[in-house]
Each structure stands twice: as structure tokens, then as C-alpha cells.
Image (cartoon, rainbow, N blue to C red; front, side, top):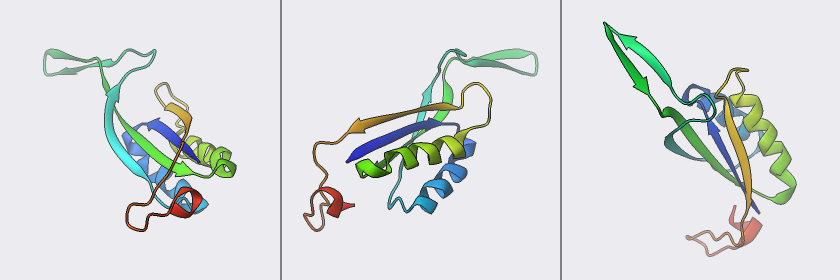
Length: 112
């Protein structure tokens, strides 16, 4: 089992969710996040005052998939999140030692 995490632009959530859903990914967890990569934030001007935002709003999406679906989940997140502009995000994959469904006590792939 693997945890696939995507850090994406908020307005790309529906596209990413639809791509994952079409793969049959049973569940998605989404968190609001803030951060920056090499672009180091941005500045806007409101009236005559410049507003500097060091941390850009992002979403963190997490899905748990079997090992044989990792590449498909990564491709789905990339396809849904990509705009071609700086700040599209990152994806990383982590191994899970154990996965348990609380309601039934099922373990591993059966718990999905």
C-alpha cells in the first residue's frame, strides 16, 4: 500500500478528483495548505497598498492505493493539476506499513 500525496492549486481540485474517481480510487482526503516553492510567493496591489503573500494557498490531496496503482494515481494527479505554469505543485509517494478500516477491522488492501 502507498500513500500518494499531491500539493496542487486549489482551482484544480475538481479536475484531480474526477481523474482519481475515474481510476476507481475509493477515497480522497483534502487539506488546505499554504507554502511556496522556488517562486517565493507573490505580491498584489490593492488600491495604493502593495500586499506581499509569502505563502501561496494550496491544497494537499492524499489517496491510499495498492502498489500496482501508484503510477496511475500519480498520472491522474499530474493530468488534473497541470496548468503549465510555475506553482503547479508536487507529488510524492510514501510506503504504508499498515492500513486498517476502523469499522470492520479489515487490514491492508481489503480495508480500501
